Length: 414
Image (cartoon, rainbow, N blue to C red; front, side, top):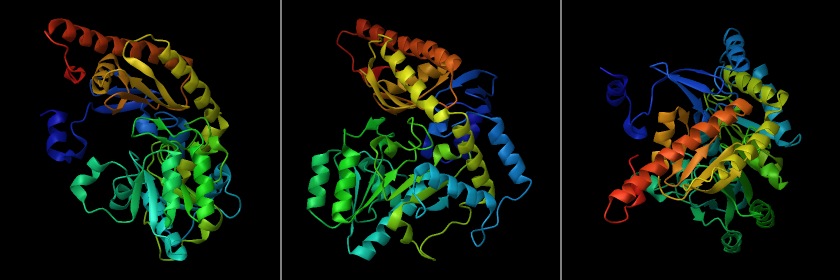
């Protein structure tokens, strides 16, 4: 029996068929069960900030696991306190900032939902605003904030009190004019929507409107945080101060951990009994995240993300491929826009060529490599990605020439 058979009978089907069986990783490379090597330009969906099996990551787990792993949140541990202080410093919360630890981005955003509700209870405001096509998680609370009706359909009714807006300053202004807004929850870049950036000045307008109307501004930095965009957090590109941010993915470098970081008066909304987590903030997870963030800082990987991201975008746009319409994003969170809805075919071709990328939607390839990439990885990526695009472009031309009518682009085999 093959591993595909085992996966089919033993794992829930919510993820569909697994694309490969990976058994080892090192740096920016993965190896499958047949020993074939792949260049990893997805990094577990913006998770493996330091790549695979980085010595700092391995040492942090080894040392802390042999010392103290978990004691529950009735108590504190040195790694937990150190990580909270580091996150406050990197986010520039000031002394009033506070940190709540969970185990994932969904848990961090669930805490943010409850923060918004606590603010609403205090102020009498009830509406929570998020954006159309936003993705904030798959728990019932975070799914209500996720602006994707197709993802919600099987789980209706949703938790009430959430309105989804088009990502325009005009729609945001109108929503606040209607009143009763307790919070706005927004991603600086909508990763799951296809690496879609907000309109110029959106976050600044959001900060002005939330302050004017007494609402919280909560920034979802799950995918954009930990240096990925070329700043520690995406909101820092706009020079604003939010009321709270959520982080996960890259802060743990592969270890499951998430956090809600509050600023100013929002830090006083939680009180004993309003939220909790058994595993959140345990000594093992916080020690690893502290080590990962420390290495990102020590090695200048935030700056590397900015420089390498610009290099990748310029290089991809210079390919001259008929499939490339342009690029989007910041730092090492990049969306390659395609001229045809063949993203799945490009992902499959890339895997055949030994490259791991992701189809964020039908016409966007998402790149989110480790922050550690250098000249060798960039050069290899250009070679493999160009070959992958050529494979799909050739298939399009073959189908067009052999058909009596122009085929739909979606007919390209995925």
